Amino acid sequence: MSAYRDEDPRIHDIKTRIRIMFQDITTLLLNPKAFKDTIDLFVERYKGKNISVVAGIEARGFIFGPPIALAIGAKFVPLRKPRKLPGEVISEKYILEYGRDCLEMHVGAVKSGERALVVDDLIATGGTLCAAMNLLERAGAEVVECACVIELPDLKGRERLNGKPFQATMP
Image 1 (cartoon, rainbow, N blue to C red):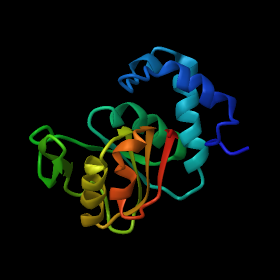
Image 2 (cartoon, rainbow, N blue to C red; image 1 turned 90 degrees about the vertical axis):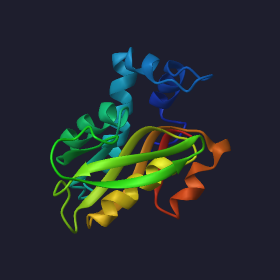
Image 3 (tube, rainbow, N blue to C red; image 1 turned 45 degrees about the vertical axis):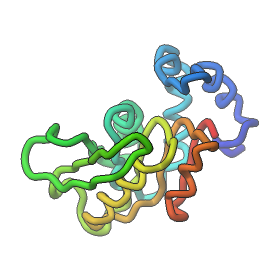
Image 4 (cartoon, rainbow, N blue to C red; image 1 turned 30 degrees about the horizontal axis):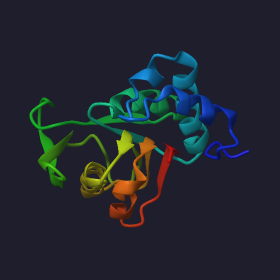
């Protein structure tokens, strides 16, 4: 049985734990079983895919990324807002529906040829995921896929990913 089909009984339980009106994951995090099931679904999808980097987008990508990275034997690379990382960084500016923003990553955190997974809690318009992919690819990584817990399909963020594979637990 595919871990990402509605037939998987874990999907129903995870859906019941998310506040639908605001697409808020905090209620999911309050339920250890649903939180574990969410992580397990990602791990089942990415284990054995030769992914060496899990890049988490600040801040909620930091919740899901590290346990996925540990379980699949990859390193975790935080993609942070400006001026949060010590030392030398590379940056990627991007436009949001309500303004501009920027992601930063340590220089040398990713090596050329590494296979990367980008993780966040939600995809809306796709701007942040695109910036994350650009940042990793500029460092020489191959972005294998982007993964989120929630997708807001009406905002068409998936279309901005230029054909890059994308997976959402809650499409």
